[in-house]
Length: 117
Image 1 (cartoon, rainbow, N blue to C red):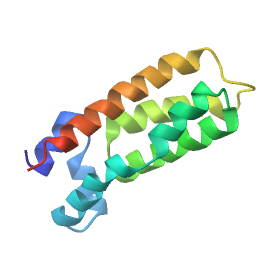
Image 2 (image 1 turned 180 degrees about the horizontal axis):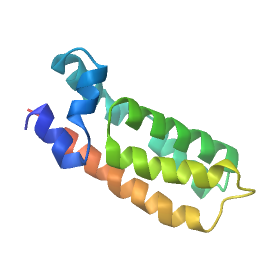
Image 3 (image 1 turned 135 degrees about the vertical axis):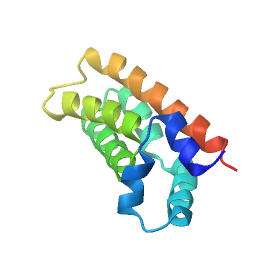
């Protein structure tokens, strides 16, 4: 699968990331490194431990990484969760439903990346 096809499969925007990063080779380099980013795992752990500050930080970081790489679907779901947690006092009940969407988008992103040529 090409990098363009990868972006299409994951619900990302190759046109947007191409405007930000100077070469397809550089884009692919950063995309291939994404599975090593610890933000998703940190978010999952923070939610399991009911730690609002860590959950917010991890969701915000994941949103930023997804935005920088133009992983549009993951950015949207991580942003929704980030905004829910931003002004919360404790982990809101809605967080689990939003985290489920983050998980679906994260897994779709990893699946697409794993199919790169």
